[in-house]
Image 1 (cartoon, rainbow, N blue to C red):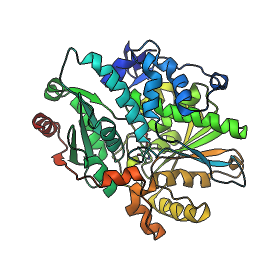
Image 2 (image 1 turned 180 degrees about the horizontal axis):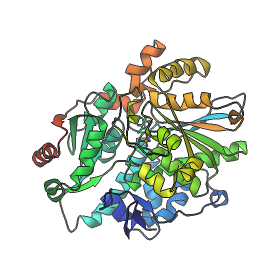
Image 3 (image 1 turned 45 degrees about the vertical axis):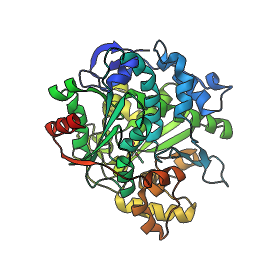
Length: 437
Ligand SMILES: *Cc1c(COP(=O)(O)O)cnc(C)c1O
C-alpha cells in the first residue's frame, strides 16, 4: 500500500508516511486506495489484536512493518476496549465503547502506542545513517501530549516535545503533560491550541528547526495514529453485529476529526457500520460547513470539552479528499454542536438515569443521542467514550457533588513531580528551547 498527500505529489510507503508525519507539500498522507474487506474476512476473529492484525494487513502490505504487525498490535492494544450495553432491558439499543482504559485515560493512547511501536521498529534502520534522536513534535489540546509522552518516554533514540495552550487543559491533564522529564520536553505556549498546532506545522519548514533536528509529528495528522483507531471501530462493529444481529451507528465526540475519520475509513473498507454522527462542542466549524457548504475555519473557543476546542479541524482535509464535494460528505456524516450548559446537564442527567459518569467530551455524544428522533433511536447506537471522567474532575465532580474514583494508571502519573517551561507562540522561541534542551 502506498500513501499520497491530500494535495497530490509522489506516493510513499507506509514507513516514510509515518516518519514524515506531514507530507512535504503540507498535505496529509492518505492511503492511495482503501482495501475492501467483508465481515467474512473476520469470521474466526474476536480478539481486538486478531481483528487489528487482519484489518491493518493491507495497509502495511509491502512495508517493513508488514511482518511485525501482530507484535505491534499486541503492544498497542494491550488494555481493554469494552463495548458495554447501557440499556440491559433493550439489549443492543444503546452501547458505549470505552476507549479510556490506557495509561493516560483517553483514546489517544491507542494511536500513540501504535505509532511508538511502529517508529521504534522503523527507526532502528533509519538511524544507521543519522544518529540524532528522532524528535517527536506534538501539539496538544490536552490528551494527545500525555499519550505520546507516555508512549515514547524512556525509549532510546527518541525525544518528545509537547506544546500545550496555557490555561486550556484540565489540572490533571496539565500534570500528565509535564510529569515526564528525561527525553520529554514540555512547553506551555502563550496562546490557544491552534497556535500550538501552527508551531508544529511551521517547525517542519523553519530553516533552523528543520535542519537542526530530525523532526517528526505525532499529531492526528500522522497516518500512524489514524490506522489503529480504525481498528477499534472495526472490532466493535463486528462485536455488535455478532451480539445483536444489526450493524451499529456511532456518535463520536469530535475535535480534529481524527477519531471520526478513522470510523469513516473503517466503514469505507466495508466494516458493518451504520450512520456516523459527529458531536462537537461550541466550536461548530464542521456543522456549519455541512450546513452551508462553505468551509470557514476560525479561531477556537474554550469550552468544557477542551480536547475538542478546535476551530480548523486538521483531518477535514482528509475527509474532503476521500469524499470530494459537499453532497458526498453529507451522505457520510452529520454533525451537531453541543454547548457547555448542555454538557453540564447531560452529565447530571445520565449519572441519574444510567448511573454512568461521562467526561465532558463523551457527554457531547450522549447529548446528541438524546437529540435523535424516536424513529432513529430504534436503531442500535454506540456512544464513543473518549476519556475517563476522573481526568476532568474539576468539571465533573461539582456537578455530581461527589469525588470520582481515579483509575490506577492515572493515579500513578499524578504522583510524579512535574517539569515544564513557558514559551511565546513563536517559532524562533521554539527553536531556542529545543536547541538547549
Ligand atoms: C482528542 C479528543 C477528542 C477529539 O478527537 P479528534 O480525533 O481530535 O476529533 C475527543 N475527546 C477527547 C477526550 C480527546 O482527547
